[in-house]
Length: 114
Length: 115
Image 1 (tube, rainbow over the protein chains, first blue to last red):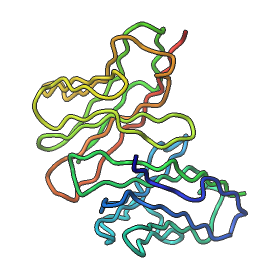
Image 2 (tube, each protein chain N blue to C red; image 1 turned 60 degrees about the vertical axis):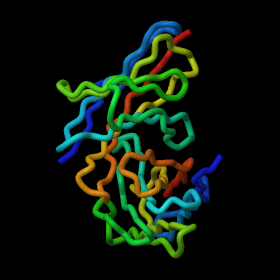
Image 3 (tube, helix red, strand yellow; image 1 turned 90 degrees about the vertical axis):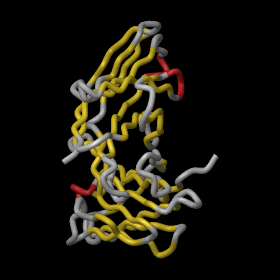
Image 4 (tube, rainbow over the protein chains, first blue to last red; image 1 turned 60 degrees about the horizontal axis):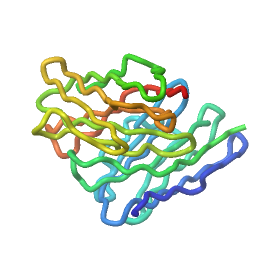
């Protein structure tokens, strides 16, 4: 069964450090989404890509967050410098350019910034 | 602009009883509607979708949802709840006005099934 793979599953680091989260979308999927989930804000869309090009990153704090797709099998989300308020679970999801297709989610990266 | 509302933060049901998790939406044109479930420490999992056709759609784990255009609702239902159905449920909508349209998720409803 094809799955979206996210690494690391857990990350604890100190404020000010750089954090990199990685996502391997399902093979053949050409649209990749990054979400952040917190108790207070719920599920927020940060950015998404189609065919490796960014389509919308309006949900992402531009001063410290960056998202890229170096190739079709890897998406990255970086935070530099990290802050305690960035503590959350970050999810990656993918689908194949289908507005009537469901997104497939990874199991997330649980990030704690001390 | 499209939006989704899940009016209940929590729904409590006794095992064996029917359950309903409510969802209403606002979108221009015909909506594409989805339900997802999230178990602890896991990502969201797709349950079912409405694209077109029969207003009653069936999905995984015995769940179904009814699309009601006049009430702009897409409530999730199950005839007989199981304790294992306890989880966080998300309704989502996509407007098909462009191929770049993004999916909008509701705030989630926590379903608790008591034995």
